[in-house]
Image (tube, rainbow over all chains, first blue to last red; front, side):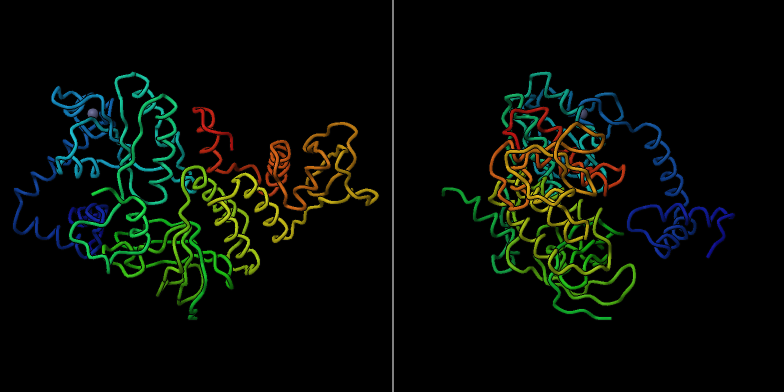
Length: 199
Length: 241
Ligand SMILES: [Zn+2]
């Protein structure tokens, strides 16, 4: 193990902070950069520096962005009467890349997890309420994960939405495209069945 | 140590590392235990999908001490699909279990009581289910509640009379209010004792009483899951729970 007092040791320690990176991969990454890709290493350092300094949360949707208001929230091509609530920036990106939705978003940056002490306050749900109170939104699509915590979050937010006489909808459950019924777990099948639709 | 075919529920789960899950299980014969399910978050993990709250499970594990290793977790029947308010109640029950039940302390009858409460939340009055669960939980944990007679003089509770319930002790005839004690009608005490909580006044009084008694055992730390109820109620016109 490289002592942390050396530059290489420090680099390895820092790389280990990345999700999914253990001591072995950290060492491999460090040595690769130093042996074969010094330019890449300098670019990475600069990109990290810039991101750490410039990235903030959008004042409206709470997603990561570099200005006060992000491009999505400012876009005139989007439907400003629709708001989709997601747990994470990654969820937002998946939805947006699928191209099925052209409204605005709100990113919770997590979900309600009462047993971990993450309640409505910790999640900053008051900012979502402020957005709803502006009056422009006609429908809120609850696209939190289909976990118990995601469900609890959807229910909680749904109540806030309905209390303002705004329509609240929840994304549907189902069998994945290409999925064979035989291999689908029972809970998914049950939900898919109860949410069946006319053909 | 290897344990096979143990009936269990997940009280709490938390991601651990990139692919594993830490769970707090409540099992029929071993009580509450901490366990790790390695690789349970991989997309095609064999038992990963099952290790969620409100899913009746049959679990195998090995090891002992602070963290056992789950080797199998099979769903036993359908997930108890709590929704909306009932789901919040489920979290509340799990939080109570985590706060009041210690690890490695087997409570077979509490296991049944816990399961009954979760199923009850599916179609019964949620508030009544919670009060009955709280009462039974306290009794199982040995905190014994006196609900059918006065603690001084032993005379049976009269439905029409007013009482003062002294937490940690029991009811005495009401004379005047006292700090920390709860004024309650005899019919509410009897309803809680007989588990027939079926009118609003009784439910409201039982709630105040149980909250005072639980407060003694929870210390100063509030229950996080209560926040979900309070704020939803405050902000919306949903039916009272
Ligand atoms: Zn934005």
